Length: 324
Image (cartoon, one colour):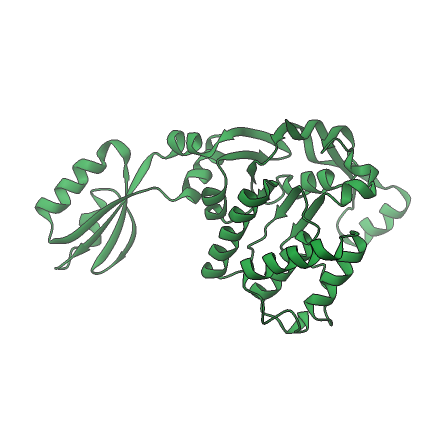
């Protein structure tokens, strides 16, 4: 059953084009010129119940605009959008009680009040029964380990603590559909991992349908089997992430530790030297040559240890965009 259906979605913005300088400012008062920015340009996809889908693309690709159309914040220029059988831009109260939008660069918590006050307010706004509220709040607080921060003013919380509380505020009404726009932005590596584990657990436990956008490709790699790739408002790919990796992972990374000095020029004869800080070096080697290079390093170089790894997911996606 498709929980989310997007058919030929378009969202255009009419933007004023001003000529440079004082003269241009004066002329624009009497003769304004406009052009259309195609933020989303004929996008279609369906998402089933319980799916956790990565929505990826470079800055300005149309990711956030699409999520805003799905959550009802923006009215589409053309096309049809359906979420849980509702038309999002109608902003029906019954619909808003079943979804949540979390934006890593925006906050919904009251800045000068403790987070618990925002949770209590959301309980009233979403008409959450008291028993359900206490049960859900207890589970979320335990999952995110924020027992000691609930009664501290939000402005005094660290970014990681605040992001956890933002998630609780968004989930207090147990939404069936969750839109996550850069939820781990600005967080340290440990906090990113903790949030990824939480999102994965929430999806599994509540069978929530989740769309995730992130510039941290590790978020997508760990959480999403399916990805939708968008650029310039157009969908370039919709399918398993592993298929992109198989097709565009053209190199392997060979990490080496030497017990004697080796010149960087000599290593460059084997492949691209990504990093060299004696005694450790990392080389990018074409797939069909990785085994041969590994043997050569072990036989002809003062090698203490060697490891062959898959190419970084960020490099693979960059290669995908380059060839698309």
